[in-house]
Image (cartoon, rainbow, N blue to C red; front, side, top):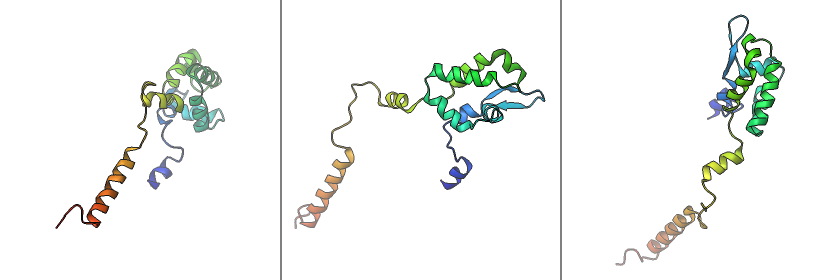
Length: 138
């Protein structure tokens, strides 16, 4: 587990977004969102987190503005709007939207007593029964 933290100190939730390509630079090298944001003087992981916290439309508009200022990829100047739309779909959804998707419809309710409490109570009863000889009379 510690190895993963060393290799990925920022976590991996933004990898799909940060390592997506924005095109090739003038030298023919592939440029990722991570390198584009870094070349703009931004912290890529902080920017990804900020964009992810915004709604889809706001994140797209903000990323479009950033990409329009990035001149290292010639093809990006022609279609930064389309690229921003595609890239923002790769961002993880904000926690509130993810949580609502995981819990399902609003009519779902968690049990009043957690299941592990029931198991704990059963184990205690079995131990007491064994201790007092109720489980094995004789």
